[in-house]
Amino acid sequence: MADKIKKGALVRAVREKLENSLEAKASDARFPPYIFESKGEVVDLKEDYALVKFYVPTPNVWFRTDQLELAE
Image (cartoon, rainbow, N blue to C red):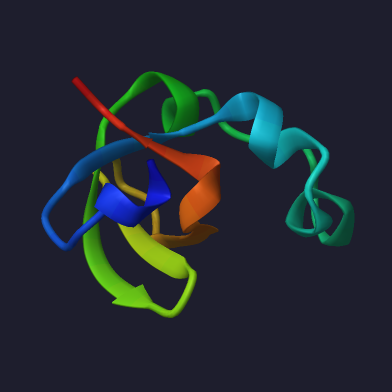
């Protein structure tokens, strides 16, 4: 699925892949519900990472592309 993620795609985070990740262990593991429940737009891609803009008043977030799924 990660290979289909492109700029402009609507995505959401996959809880199972994010909760036990290195990123979760390196920071606060309490993720806000909106990253799992709402759609975000991919605004940039660099190697295996995607910068996602959620439509809430928060900064954009970098995710590994394998931690994302296309939103329907």
